[in-house]
Image (tube, rainbow, N blue to C red):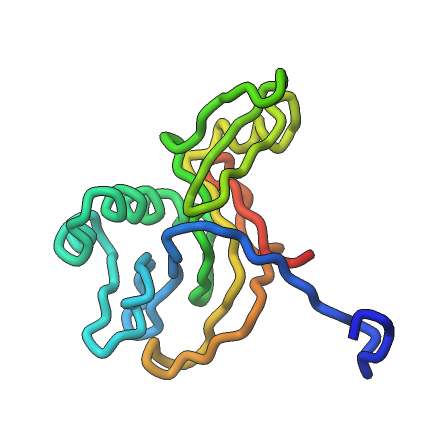
Length: 172
């Protein structure tokens, strides 16, 4: 396929990022309210989080609870219009400065992979001021959460830029 056998001239390729937790965020079409959640947002008894109290009730485990509260506070700044899914890469408290082979890096480990970004780069500076980082990979459309269909890819060009959220898409 990559050697020109694809019938279309445009080829979409994405990278798998090893983030956690999976975050769903956007506007619930049923009530027009912004929410965040995990994979439970599409369950029959959906766990939608509109407030910190919702997160306390639906996700009492300390680590996930803290991450979802960060997502709820800052992801609304992006102006998400539909529903999108991504992998949370870090919250501010996850970022560390480490020396690796004599060089300074900002590091974070959301799951099994440790990411390291050279401290003296623009990317590291953006991450260090952000409250969280996320890589978006899936968008959802439909008249209700129960009827939404997934589409691989997110048009991050429609999202507001904010210093509080470092974000990318999974496109390569």
